Length: 106
Image (cartoon, rainbow, N blue to C red; front, side, top):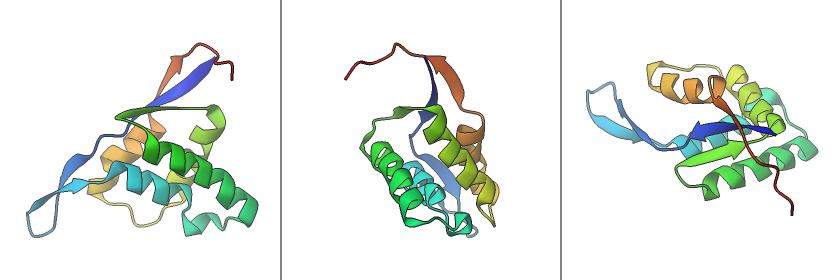
């Protein structure tokens, strides 16, 4: 079984006034999942919210299924107004490493 591994650690970005600040990766991914440009209905919003909760509860890395990764990619492609500070986040989503994982039995 395959999954996508994503680094969730925050990174440092430069503001226009040349100050550094942390880029909050988890919060940004959650915003991407529920991007208003997607015009989500209630069912789709709740499906993506489950992924957002999983991201917020994860450690420094997370494994996502094809479907979960699809939600993130769809959101990343729909976002308008991305800038240089967003490059690392978008790379982590669109270039996520695909890894082999053992199937988990619940």
